[in-house]
Length: 390
Image (cartoon, rainbow, N blue to C red):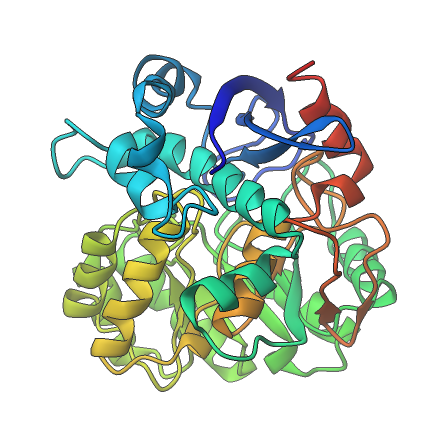
């Protein structure tokens, strides 16, 4: 029976000077953890690693004062799976969230998600399996996807960045093997953003299905509708997060008037929030995309609850493309047969992106057989993790 003997926590800056319509990322950081077990391999303990997705700051205070102590105080039998072979993620989740009032999910959900990632990494390493293989075996999910659709998210705002530089950035994504790209809108005037969209479409041969746009929750209703009218003729892949993530009425009105696909959900952090999105935001299961982030929203344990709820409401898992752009979501996408995974080529380092040797072809990425999530194949991030513990 594996036991947790130590949990090391730290903070790392994410490398980015970009801005979207709402925030810049230059001062943003994230939490990192190492969960050390008593199981030895080649004389070294088996360790699970985790971090939080970009877009939310580190949650070290919550980790140190509440989440980590609850796990370390637990008796080993409170955490083990029924067969005693692994740390049970659901039991650990219950302990981490003990004595927390419902609602107000915020940064608390981030802290739990960081540890959740590390526990799944640990379990897969204990089994000697890549995480997506461990997930399908542990949860009886059937055959996983052999490769995953990935798209390149970029097109951020920067001082002096003109349409020509935007086009150059997008050409770089295509050269890396991406067929589908995403760009930011809402940080300039509507007229200027339309010119930026047209510039990117030139690079994509005029094919709007290869381009998604993201407003990062910037717009009020009138602005969201105005952008919708301007974007509709382009036939875009999707129009993402037009208004505040919790303004379901805005989203419902837009969905009535904008016939193209919409996407949202990355800033909703619980299965209750996800359920309210389906109830009140006019989401359409035949065309729209759901972007809940498994790490920011209490981890994979909660994300599995969201998937159960989606099936009950008639949604296919293929309509889910998680926010985050990292290896954990990539394994989840393969195991749960989701619609794909986000990617930020070269951004949000050291946590963002995939293995150093990852090869993307026509916006598809095959997973490796490395045990766990495969952080050891991402050298810069692995160095950061190793610095956490002896």
